[in-house]
Image 1 (tube, rainbow, N blue to C red):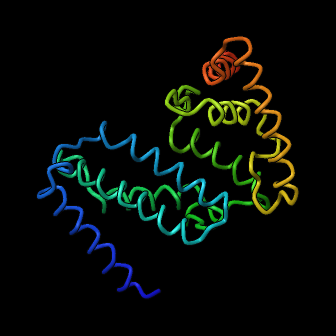
Image 2: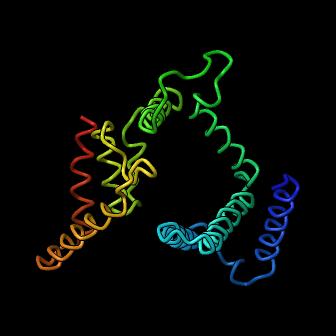
Length: 216
């Protein structure tokens, strides 16, 4: 893909988004709080398309997610708090900062000992702590995360040596493992229903109990 083609497509999307914000009654009414639920929904639809390995659906859902990013960036711009260019620049800087094994600094050179995906994840945590100043575990505790995602994050913090969830091509048995774990989770939800318990709230509370130990 040519750089000009990409720039032209993004400029057209930006122009249409601005026109919708100006001329469409629904778009004019929106703010970040009203839009973000749609953002979450689109992200889940993208995840489903990826799980089904459906390229056409992924293109469609990626487009929906991209529109969410452009629209929310426009809302920030209206508030004088940044724009899409600033967001893209910040993201690029962060990607470079968190991948010193790919983008070595002139002062320190290339990061050594980075050979596996687990090495990269451990390096990310070190950079977040030592370079970006995340001194407190509270920095990563996001109450808006679904309980399963949050529990997975807490478990990773508790035992970063464990194999990361959904380990991609490094997990050749992923389909069979997903089916087995899916059945286990299904039974856990059924047990929660039998006991009159909300499984989302129950898992959230259990994850929080374990997360508290990380601050002691």
